[in-house]
Image (tube, rainbow, N blue to C red; front, top):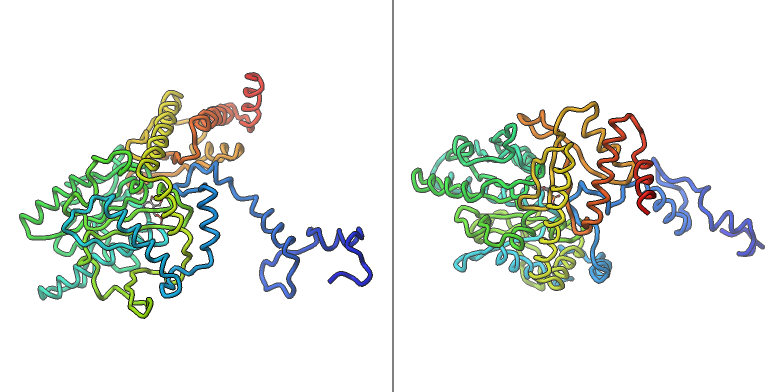
Length: 459
Ligand SMILES: Cc1ncc(COP(=O)(O)O)c(C=O)c1O
């Protein structure tokens, strides 16, 4: 409260009530009293300045910029709980339209009755997809009077952690095809050795988290068709297209990875990656509704009718589904194609410059998605981890990491080329990368200085 007799113009009032440096932030217990909105805002805002700058975050696949009209729709729909279909039926209609659009984008054949859902991200979509396959396998075992206590799933060491999570959380034996030095995806022969009648599904990743490469889905499909023909085992493929799901249909429309392949029964993608929507949004599409067991559907009341839902969460925001629809409507196939081509062009340019630098060896120069990965050409007195830290001085966030087991003597760096990473930004980044290298080689702690000297001498 303002002390009695104090005017707003009073200097004390200004100091005590409009400024905020005397306020403590709650760290352990609920504060007994609140504070002025402006103070609370400013304290949190200032503290969050310690976070990295999302625009310079080359580590993330996740969208960091959307158009102002999309931002407006997001704010307008933030307060709508997506699960309340009775209250907000139209958001649900929009979700269904997007499922239709994606199923068609993924070349669903005419004779299938696809179903799908939005999710919080690809992780939830992967769990739900694989859970359905586990359930179908179990129902088949029961029907055939076989035991159903030892399900397994076959995927590569190149998959995202959400696959291991699924296996552990849902009690399925993970049969992981290990990676090898210089081979960072899986092949049909290795997978063939691991499948049997208790295999609930085979996983294929389009755009691995580690190197951005593609598992050979068409070869896996051919192998599983042979298995079906020879042994009568009908093992589904779940394609994890977290990244490629919004790139390949636009950049390489003739590349066959989707429902054109018979054994591909379900696909996930992340709306918040190259779907160009902020986090968190994912999508899961099943080739046919028969793949989604009735037992796994839950019904919520919808305008006096019962609406089936298939989700691990309950409440969630509506904004991102709406934002996805905005992008689809605003950009169209043409707009997504232009952006995908632009990102791929910039990624190829980055790969070329990194290869030419002489210091690094490319593992993947954006073969299918705009991701560039590279390792040091030769051992140096500093590692890529050091380089990653050094680049932080200029604001760049670039991850360095070791590859999964059996390939883990290789340490790499990965750059995800998103829409805002223009060729000009590539130039600045490569210059900073070289300067950081030089600084580390010379034991010079400041690549920033090296950069500004260069910049001044040019101007
Ligand atoms: C191949 C792959 N699958 C799944 C995921 C998890 O996606 P999300 O963050 O949308 O849950 C990622 C995340 O980077 C990924 O790269």
